[in-house]
Length: 291
Ligand SMILES: Nc1ncnc2c1ncn2[C@@H]1O[C@H](COP(=O)(O)OP(=O)(O)OP(=O)(O)O)[C@@H](O)[C@H]1O
Image (cartoon, rainbow, N blue to C red; front, side, top):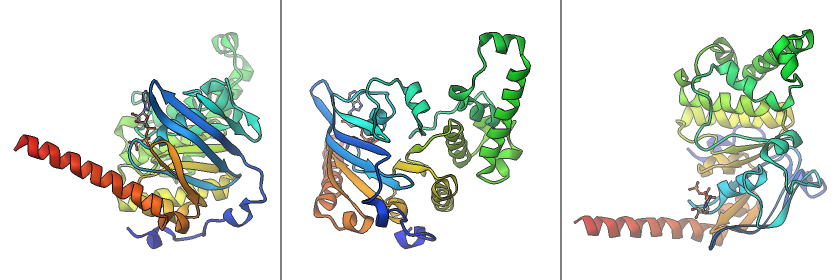
């Protein structure tokens, strides 16, 4: 698929005004080490409201670690992460969700033994007020809150059309891969985020499903006003919809710019080609060993 095919509707919208707008998310000189390994090294990143920003890079470049740092799964070894100017230091993942950051995962993480609707309801739990006593005695306010939560969950499923609403009582394990990705996004939306992190939202999808995903990611920004940071391996997808693209290699940010700037950046080309030739050399070595 060419980037032209993906770039079907709006051009990156926020880039023109980006330099004048305050950051929603800011990484300042963020480093994460695991023992002797530096997974993320002195990374700066700015994501402004209503931007779609991609983080790309070869395998092992540090992309997922950046997501885990933003969502509080890991603490930076040094540096700072701010949301709307406020540091997220020391906040647990739950508290970071309450600040307005939610995510999806590279390997879809849904509760397979729960229905589509129940999975989306789980996403709202951080926002529900019912305490233990209220839930036990099912007070009127708890019943009303549950009703509102179900309505909201159905509304979120409806964002993806009528198909998932019709299958609200189906176990998620019976859904197609593409539908499970949609349910995971609906669950992330249920916590009412400002910033949505999508970890490889089109992984495992065919070309038609990928184009569909590109459209709804744009709609998340255009209709729900969300800011989106995504990791994506399909370069045509990122090139077609990103306001800017940050490129990581061995934990360092080696480029950050408009799609066309990044596409022709010599360091970026070298990083991708370098890793490919490493992989090829490893393949050749193991083939030689096997022979
Ligand atoms: N919990 C951890 N403990 C030790 N090393 C880790 C841990 N998490 C990540 N790493 C290492 O940090 C580096 C960056 O990994 P990361 O998963 O962030 O890369 P990535 O760019 O997301 O890769 P991929 O595209 O393959 O998912 C790798 O060398 C990885 O082995």
